[in-house]
Image (cartoon, rainbow, N blue to C red; front, side, top):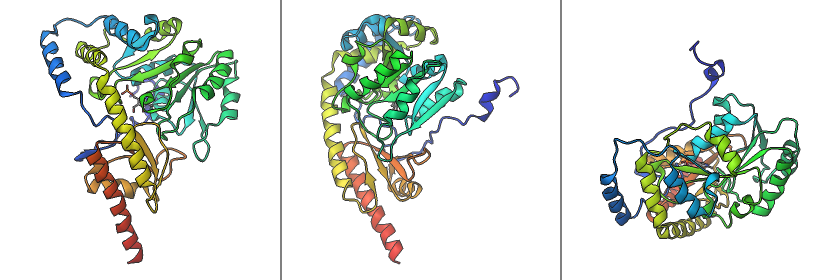
Amino acid sequence: MKAFKPHLAELPVYPYEHHRAPIKLDQNESPYDLPEELKGELAERLRELPLNRYPEMDAEGLVHKIAEFEGWPEEGVVVAAGSNVLLTALAMAARRVLDLVPSFSLYKWSARITGTPWEGVPLGPEFELPTTALRAHLEDAEEPGVFFFPNPHAPTGRFWTPEVVRTLVEVAEKSGWVFVVDEAYYQFAPADFKRHARELAQVVIARTFSKAWGLAGIRLGYFLTTPELATEIKKLLPPFRIPSPTALAAELAMDHPGYLAEVVEKIRRERERVYLELKAHPTWKVYKSHTNFLLIRTPNAEAAFKGLLQKGILVRRMDGQPGLEGCIRVTIGTPVENDAFLKAAFELEEASGAEREG
Ligand SMILES: Cc1ncc(COP(=O)(O)O)c(C=O)c1O
């Protein structure tokens, strides 16, 4: 690998292990596909789509639609095939990356693959925001960089009010930092940051079609930011980057947003039910969440993961990150899937209790 940049040799591949299971609760996807009638309409529109032609250079039609949907100036909207791609582009641009620990692992991974210096500030023992330490970093005007802040937070599910976030952004702006509010899960939370972001100069909001919209398969994410930042970020993205079927599907979904509200309501209700039931678990600790998933601390993440998998339920191990010892993460599924998960969770406990006594 002499031909490649030396820092790449030490890098691990992105930490995701593929497993098959009848009940898939490991990727924070929506358990609900696009409604049947919309899928039918999409199939019809796809038939008309000239696949021999390149899509628009910057997906102008789609950008226009997102701008309208969000009430955001078109010049400040940037799209890519997944918000992942956009976040990595920002890490590439950044002089340095500031992160939380734990956080969405893609931020650190993006910094590492792009050779950008990375620094992580630990959350508190109950995942409290380390405000003083963050301020100290964000006040550094000598070498500002990009701060990735998921809100609601992944993978803990915590949420901080826009007022709390704004205080930090104002510190960051003064010293030239770019503040990314990653709102992949905002539909499941009590509030979002958009109104505030309109009044601020150095904020990037990241959103995605992969979660509440139930469209992880089309790969589409976007930034809402200032025209100035949008122009800089677009320099790092390839032209013609949104496949035309992706744009078509997203446009169709935005024309029928009614299903989204229904799905979000169902998932929120189920999240609260699963949370409350899990609180009665004798050895697991479940954390309050404002997303479509729950973080759970178990005595042994490997045993919990394997035990659930044996029962046909796939969750995600989270114990690799500092502060998440023993943790697994479960996506909220359909009521039937959630029932199966809860049953398995309590059965596992009975089995390990019997083992302890035996
Ligand atoms: C906080 C956060 N941001 C972004 C993403 C990725 O979104 P996309 O599918 O648009 O790349 C995820 C996916 O899990 C996420 O948890």
